[in-house]
Image 1 (cartoon, one colour):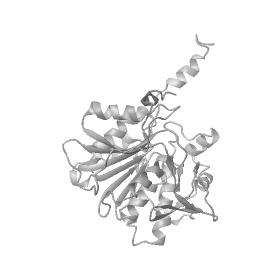
Image 2 (spheres, one colour):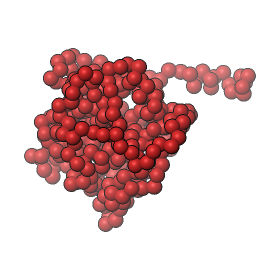
Image 3 (cartoon, rainbow, N blue to C red):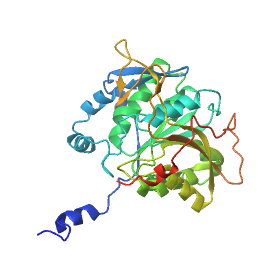
Image 4 (spheres, rainbow, N blue to C red):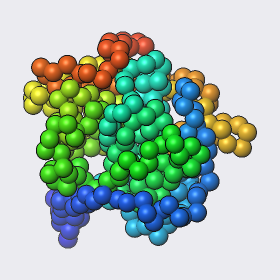
Length: 333
């Protein structure tokens, strides 16, 4: 039987079923430590050299994982509540690290950092190299075990004294469930995070409030969160304008635009003697790629509190004016 608009009632019912988000769990690296390391590339941001598992090799190693297998069958980078894109290193991650390391901006040594929606964990790896304690969080446990942990161990084996891997922790699952899981542990202010770094995590507007709550409830009152994102996620629905409006309506956190750009900065990548691909991005000698969707980096702090671990205050900057702000209003699927 066909509905009034030509779609079957069963299909309509299927489309409106609520999503079942995975429960959060702490993931321990005991099993992965003895696993055979995957092939890797060396990627460079400023003076930081990182060994990074080749995403295509990681995907090949996860063919039996239900979430990854489902995404591969549909040739999709995103299946809501099933696979949330963690195997791909997204563009804003490169932009954020290029900005972060262009000059001294934050104090890393001795500070506690959450790499939220970490995927491959590139941002957290840089923080580890620079002396921070890092907790990694991503939705899919398969991403944590096959990529994030592998990347940490790859770099720690080379210089175990630099990487305090015994202080690294890993979490998987939904953000609200992550809050529930860690609620008792994070009651006291001193155990909260000095910094929260998150990149390309506002693509789904249904998760904006959960993301906001993680920052609000797990960041120290004198801490800073940095959010890197595109102005608009076509076909998915999320936008920076929506997230900024949420911040305004909640009136707890204030945001400052640290960087605004329509260029894509990409790192040097060594592998096979020439620049190659990482995820779906072509990487070539830290050069700016042609323009695209506007990208911003936001600094989030608590109203009424001054951040104590920021070396240089950030200033609003842009490589060019955003000529058509209506772009952010047209991000529907």
